Length: 271
Ligand SMILES: [Ca+2]
Ligand SMILES: [Ca+2]
Ligand SMILES: [Ca+2]
Ligand SMILES: [Ca+2]
Image (cartoon, rainbow, N blue to C red):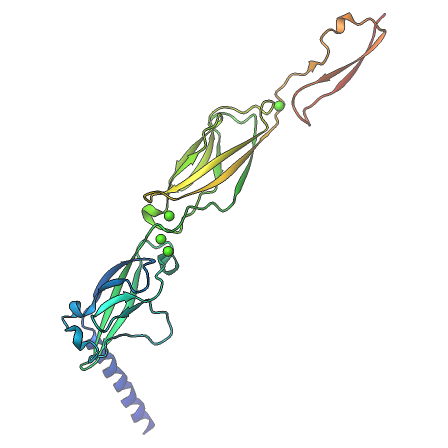
């Protein structure tokens, strides 16, 4: 007997399944920009279902929800408008995905009908390009040759397509230009460095998205020029030949920093 009940139960499930397939009466498709104010109109359900607005209440039209997920839209039963009910944030819903579609189900009774509602969420430019850090520190030897490349961490923008990062601008300077490729940003040495002239360089790098007007984010690239042993030692006192005392101490230094700096004490003994 239990087996028979189980069979009947299974049969009922199949019938319910078949019924539910029959109940789907076609999809409704809409499009809405993210971040629209609550109450903004997305479309009109009554018009698209070919129903009189006055019949919506009788048909108990509603967005089907089992209570387990957030509902972003609602129906105005007086006129059939599909409206924004709570904040639709494209970045929160779909992240990096190029296409973002909210799926809801619309229920009608007397007779029972079920429609799928697909709402395409369109991106707006509501995020700025951001670098992970405020400062990027790079150490470059003064012996680095022209054309040497130094990778910079890219900026990120939570928007997609044209509203994500499109270009970079490097503050005008004497030594570096920027090399931007699809997945990389490099600082390129365009004129060789000289630590004996300049030890540290700060450069402002700006990332821009493709909005109108564009939004931007910046980072300071702090370059420390490392010393190379590129100076010949010179005497601190060039007129050593005119020395008259019997002993003299001369200091020999070069302009490089430690460990290349040499300070030699020479003792001279003149007869
Ligand atoms: Ca957003
Ligand atoms: Ca956005
Ligand atoms: Ca953006
Ligand atoms: Ca040096």
